[in-house]
Amino acid sequence: MARQFDVIVIGAGPIGGYLSRRFNEHGKSVLLIEEHDQLGRPFQCAGLVNPASMKTIGLEDTILTTIWGANIHSPSGTRVTIGDPNIPRTFSVCRKLFDESVVMQSIATGTELLLSSKPYSATVYDEFVQVEIDGPNGEETIHCKLLCGADGAHSWTRRYFKMGRPKEMMIGFQADVSGMSGKDNWLEMYTGRDIAPGLFAWVIPTGNNTHRIGVWARPQDLEGRSVEECYDSLISHPLWKERFAKAREIARYCGPVPCGVIRKPFKDRVMVIGDAAGMAKPTTGGGIGPGFRQVEAIIEKLVKAVNKDKLDASTLSSVCKPFKAFRKEQDRARALRDLLVTIPDDEELDSHFRMFNRPEVLDLINAEGDIEHPVPLGMTLLRRVPEFRKLAVKAGFKLLFA
Image 1 (tube, one colour):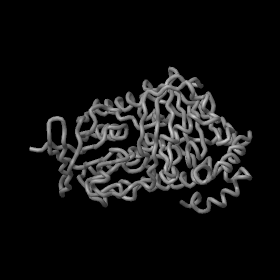
Image 2 (cartoon, helix red, strand yellow):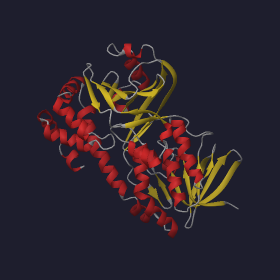
Image 3 (cartoon, rainbow, N blue to C red):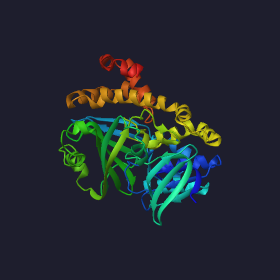
Image 4 (cartoon, one colour):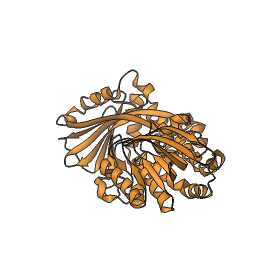
């Protein structure tokens, strides 16, 4: 006889782990399925967790460094420094330990975890979902009231149930390195068509003289190049190569970054969440903060729907109404990103940096800047900085009414 759970969650990353825990805290039985044989691998993230998310999850022991701000470099080398050593902007975490700890919190509240297991079939019936999985002990049939896919950018759940694709699918590349010097509490960001066409590259301090160096880009902006080639261009760039001269690679990773919540992240008794639903931020690619917010926005109504066993697409559509606000927020952030970073050529970017570097503009950025919510700052700059007002006209209705 098939085992039965209230909820099956596919994907034991931080969002799947946190969602499972929140279901447990409301008395629901949860099976968490992970295809890999260990948690936190493969590593496909910059490993930054903002203060609000850290407060939510309470895993301060996973913090490697506290990030106070950033040095952002224009294509020609103009540096803009933002931040305040008295205000933590984000945290660099040990991502493996962070992921493991989120899932262990969930297990402590009652979740059952299956590693080295993945679904290969799922059938929705009137009263349950029948999920067929292939695990270390062979094939197994399991029943649940609700199937949740928190299975990342390449989500099996989203593809199997033909839910569409996120609006954008960027490509990210990152290397862990040792041997570099630098300030442990400051990010470095680099722009320019040679090294990060349309977006930016980053250097994140991770303590003990180690860093994460990464690049991300939209596929259409790469013009036939790979993100690895962009990375090579960064570390060999005439302006920056001395910075990276002593860097020695420990590991490298590459993966997609899904930005743009899909239109219908649900069907009868099935839904997707986190990166699987396209929740990553179009401005930074971060997915942990948005994913936690997404869980909190729906968990109360979702639990009630599970309790009533009313999990048809119409009910889940009502549960997922907050996703529309997330999508609107993403659209506005994307319009702002395109206006200030993605569309401009290197000459225009340099001009923007010169404006950013003015004392009165830096004061605005430091007063209103929020890594999770960049649109209010962007709108303030467009309204109050004369040179940016022309850009406001160019932005048109996307920023105002998206």
